[in-house]
Image (cartoon, rainbow, N blue to C red):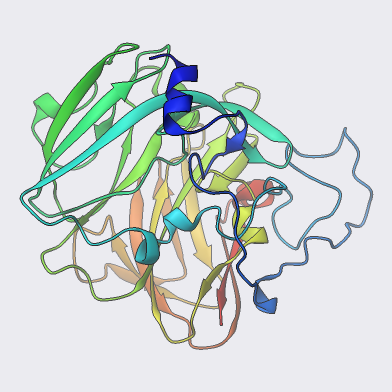
Length: 342
């Protein structure tokens, strides 16, 4: 099956879909709370020209990110990363079965910014995979692209199922792993050159729930990565969940007084470190999520490449709470966002 046939099979007819959506719907009619509007029509102090404009930047600018999401983006575009509403409890039964398809396709990752992405199932990041501790997993991997690829899961498993071996174009393989340890683990392609395969979009998040699950909370996954638009070995824009500037334009909305749990991962290439800072609030940190008691309480965490953490907090006052990496060039170039308590 070639790329055109695979896109037809998925139901993706055209090119240039948003990185975070793939086959998901691009439409929605949610009402926006006034607190969720970031004033994206606010003019900047000096006119922008083609010479001074960042990739994805438009002449109107909100407070934070200088890079804006695609014009067709709406508040439901990344709803699949709202785990409390889109990801059910780990499937019952002794086995978890799923499939992962590689497809290479153009994706819109910011305003007027299209990349030739390599994707798991036509979306970046790949779908959230969630299992229970000890659950046997069978993952059918199909490579519908013109390059060798693989899928490697972090965690503990049989080294024969590690996913570093290239799977050629048109080939498939079944990976069998036992979910564990508990926590938040990334998965990604492991074919050299790794930086190229991962920076083009081949990464996703894998959650292993403890027996009985974690305490109830509103859950969201935030995966930070960069887009190297010129293939120069440097990131030009940055994005939470694939789309630069998205959470500046469309904040995460939570009720006052409800516990919030964020699964945060740093999947950037070309940058050795990134951080996550939340304004006006501190949070409990569960490093990798492999323990059920917090490692620390703070307002900023620093993550190396592929490092991740689970954080928990409760917003007690209505308002807008900014978040971003404290590497300001990342925030300026697409990785600034808001959480709104309503």
